[in-house]
Every structure is written in C-alpha cells, then in structure tokens.
Image (cartoon, rainbow, N blue to C red; front, side, top):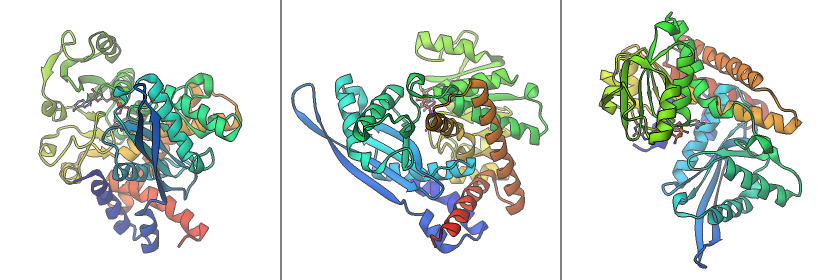
Length: 411
Ligand code: NAD
C-alpha cells in the first residue's frame, strides 16, 4: 500500500463518522493546485542537466499553503500530493491559519557540488515564484534541505519581488529571521503530547519509561526532552542499530557519543537489541521518530507500550491501528504529535511579518499551550464519536475545514 492509500483510510473513517457533506469531502480529496517544473542547471562539467520539481498546494481553505520542500531521488508527484494533504490536516488539527503544501525536486543532493545545489535551488524558486509568497504558500525545509537552502531560496525570492521577503519561507537561520526554539520544536511536541496522555492514564512521568526509534532531529530532541521530564529513556536507535539500557540513558551524553562515532551503536553500558525488540519493549511510551511503516500488522500484536507518540510521519499502518486500538494502546497520531515543527514555523512567520522577535521561553510557552489545547480537543472527540485518536484528529481537522468551506460558500 502506498502512503496516499494509507492516508485516505483514517480520512474516510472520519468522513463517515462525522457525516461530512459529500461536496466538502470531494474538495478535501483533491489538491487545489499542483505545479510541475523543469529546472535547467549548468553543471560543473559544462553540460546542462534538467531536473524535475513539484509544488503541490493541497488546500488554502484556512490560509496560505504551508509545507516543506524535499530533495530526494524518490520524490514523485503522488508523494508530494500526499504530503501536502497531510500538511493541510496537521495545520488544521493544530488550529493554525494555514492550508497544506509540499514541494520536492527529483535529485540526489549528495551528487551535487555546493555551486550546483545553489543553482538548482535558485532555479526552482524562479519556476515556482508565481504561486508562492507570504500570503500564498510558505515553504520550509524537509528531507535533505536545510537553513542554508532556505537562505538561498529567500534571497532568490527577494530578488524576484524586489523586496526583503523573510516571511515567504520558514526554517531559516536566525540572522535572516529564523525563530528560536525551532530545532527542538517537533521533538518537544512529541513529548508534550505524550505527557498529556500520561495524565489521562494517571502515570507520573517519573514512573514512566520510553523507547525512541531514530536519533535524528526529531528522535534526539524527543529523547532529551523526555529525559528532562524525568521519563526513563531505556532504548534508542538509528539506522545503524538499536541500544538498550534498563537503568536509562542520558540522551545528551548519547548525542555527544554519536557525534564522535557517527552512531548511537556501541554506547558504553548499552546492550544491542533488534529493531523488532525496540518496538515491542515493555515500556510506557514508544516514540517512533525515524520513518514510515514501522508498526505493522506483523508486529502490532507484540507492542507492549501503553502510549505511542508518533514523531515520524506515517509510522503506523491502518491494519496495525486496528490491532493497537483493540489492545487499548493510545496512539497519538502523527498529524497531532509531530505538529510542533509547523507550529513553531507559524511563530517564525508571525515574527517575520511583524519584524518583532520572541524569546525562546515565549516560543516554548506558546507551543506548549497550542499543543496541549490540540491534544485535549482531539481527546474529547474520541469520546464524542467513539473513535481512536487518529480518526478523532481527522474529525477535528475536517470540522475546521468544513466550517470555513461553508462560510466561504465553497459547496
Ligand atoms: P533525520 O534525518 O534527522 O533523522 C532520522 C533518524 O532516523 C536518523 O537517526 C536515522 O539514522 C534514523 N533511521 C533511518 N532509518 C531508520 C531505520 N530503518 N531504523 C531506525 N532508525 C532509522 O530526520 P528527522 O527530521 O528527525 O525526521 C524523522 C521523521 O520525522 C520523518 O518521518 C519526518 O518526516 C518526520 N518529521 C520531521 C519533522 C521535523 O521537524 N524534522 C517534522 C514533522 C515530521
């Protein structure tokens, strides 16, 4: 099953449960606009190569489209459209005044020189400039794109419009309008959501344990912030392997080790375990923060965690959802749990629009407040409609979109 089919399963369950108007459902099922562009780049060897890129705006019902741009050899039109759809839902659940968008270029950036990468980046912005902008569509980093690439994009777009344009893109360096607190934001959201779930289960964080899959941006911050809250982090992993320590890790120290050795594997005092074992450990919280399709019908029955907080996009398959729900495991879905990144991107945009910059404390305080409110809202919907957290999150998102579509006279 591809991720688009997977994404539609809980969406359709939500449409049915809330009896969403057919016209509204049809609008949500189709992206508003998708642009395919060809980007010629003069390569270092003197030849000109033409790359293919996309920008999909799934929805601008609640505000400008918002979502990252990825550089990867497997980027496809379908993938970009699905990810844009997820962004619409993620922003709507979080209550942000945004629609959903996503972009990508089919390229393996590791094969390009810095000059070629910059030329490709500027060429892409030249081609999509017509449909983006701080009130139309606001890109951000995604797989293989970073603050440097955002800086080139912002510079190119400012040249095209003839004015300083920090608000057209987020995930920038602080010196060109980036926000404090952005790097940790997605992991912080995963933790805030899990702490709310612990409250419902009446478990003190100091009595809880967790396993975190993935030790990149999301996983490492998730582990560090769980540790700060007193949750015992007993398992960690990256693409090279998985480590276990029943006494608990200090993820800050693991991070120092991984920075030197290139992996968490071999951390002193840890025991190697398999990926399957990590996912099925007897812990309070499991946080899959690596990639999609990790908890499936093949391993869901063995999952022992009481709470799953999804840092990655799409780590649990629909078949696994059914099994986990029957076992009484609370799955905090990706569109709710990993919305912390886009929430702080929203703060970056506000700061850019007003040229007024916030302290890190203010960013964290506002993020926590928004995410707690989003969690409580989704949890209340699980009771009202007798559905799991994932379907409830889609009901919340669709409810907000539907209200706006109705008042705008869209159906
Ligand atoms: P990243 O590249 O920084 O880190 C990914 C981590 O996962 C790395 O530690 C990598 O070694 C590990 N990994 C990869 N394959 C693995 C495997 N098979 N088993 C175990 N570990 C594996 O990426 P990231 O930004 O942390 O993103 C992780 C996930 O979170 C992705 O699904 C991404 O779409 C999602 N996400 C990220 C953000 C964000 O702000 N970065 C926001 C929302 C969602």
